[in-house]
Image 1 (cartoon, one colour):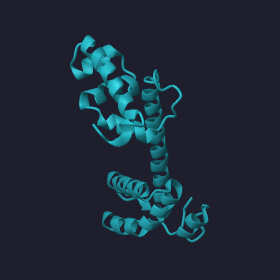
Image 2: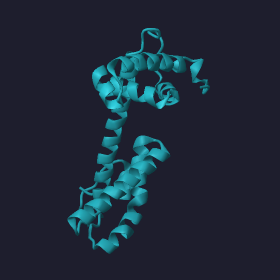
Image 3: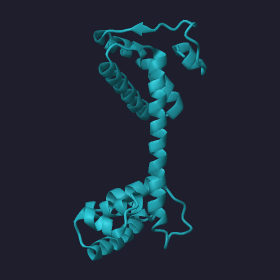
Image 4: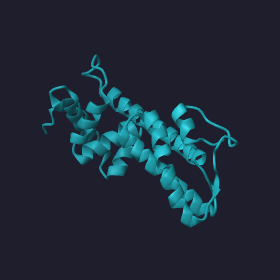
Amino acid sequence: MCVTLAAVRAGYEMTASEEEVQVRVDRGDVVAILDGSLPVVYDYLLRRVGDRQQAEDLTSETMLAALTAVRDRGSEIVSVGWLIGIARHKLIDHWRAREREQRRLRVIFSGMQERHVDEPFEESGALRALAQLNPWQRAALTLRYVDGLSVPEVAAHIGRSVGATEVLLVRAKRAFRQRYSPEGLTGDE
């Protein structure tokens, strides 16, 4: 199935018989075709993510994937529909990665809820609090609660003894809680 600019703007897909031109391209023509298709792909992604910066990033990933596919396979039929298909896959990957990140943050937060049981989870606050920790604390918390490693595995990764890693995790959780609390999100270190 091919997608034209009018079809994208109207929100439906058209068949190949409805005004879609597919072009078998030489490598030299690829950039020109991708440049001409860029606004269509960008509009498609912007309508779905609602954020200009994210749509730009996804459009770049789409164009890079298209160039890579053309380079790796030689001549390729390049059309707006083909590019929209790549964009759709990039969008799905983006949504999956976003969901994984949110799950990981919920895991980190749930592992530290002894004091904050009634407080709602705020993703941006958790990210800011995590960013304010020193690199050792951030690594230990991430390995333990995001990646799900055991304390001995975390110790092996960071090159510390199990006892030192347990102490590091206790201190890291305490520091995270302090920075995650409303008073701690002021940006002060």
